[in-house]
Image (cartoon, rainbow, N blue to C red; front, side):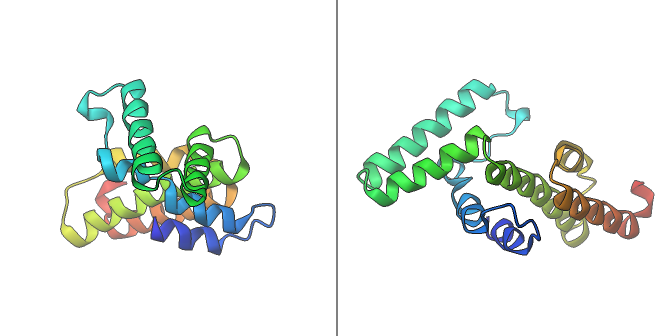
Length: 151
């Protein structure tokens, strides 16, 4: 989330509300902090994942933060990200996809983790924002330079 927020601040896209993008980056995985990072390989349906995350957000907003104005703002931002209906939410989703590739490259390079090709394939090719697409190409190029056998 921190790296995504920093990347949001680096964009040259003047049509985006950067402050909102940074806030979306901060809250986008808040429910995941409670339920964990549920991957498709765990056999949990998308509907169940959404339900678990919505329940976690409800608990966070209503039980922990007592539905305060700040809690309502967090919930609204999280819902905006989940719905993906604004340019900012779609941009942050693309940053999330990019960040997954960055993290996979770091794991391969720094930890010696065997090929994490699935992480690259499930994220970077689905990026829609032109600037983030360029950043994604840079990540893939770095991976090719680092691991020529993976290309």
